[in-house]
Image (cartoon, rainbow over all chains, first blue to last red; front, side, top):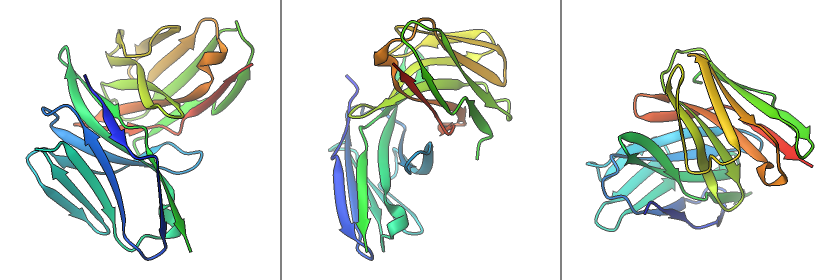
Length: 113
Length: 110
């Protein structure tokens, strides 16, 4: 079955690096995504990685993909208080020809000054 | 910004009443989705649409119906709201292989 798992909570100090981890189950996923949700807001696409890549870097964000272990991580360098939010990992799966997203439960990142 | 609006943004209603939530997009995307977000569950797909009048069920569709009479609008209806449908509802569109989300509707069923 499809399942995406994340740890529930991460606390870091401002200026440190944050690493949010995710495991997924569908080895045929073509894309994997990271979304950010601030309080009271919708989900904002942060970044995504294509399944034939091992790493993608975008300014302070680094995504690592280990397909063998079905493990995805998001590293935020120089974490700021504005990075405090819930981060969702999601994988694409195919279901009777329809492409859908399966989300993890989200990791709440708290950045303290 | 994918040009998605949702209305209303907040609603409180009573058990047994009908409720309709609206999702509006301005970019003529073919695929639209309705999700609900609950603590401990992430986002779960309720219904989706792949064109005008073309809709199908997601993983948590019981108690919900949808309609799409024009490309820009996707309506989610709770025919008879129950307390278990208290949630935050998000609409999304698909652009290429990525989904973009609206701001959400917080629904409370008393």
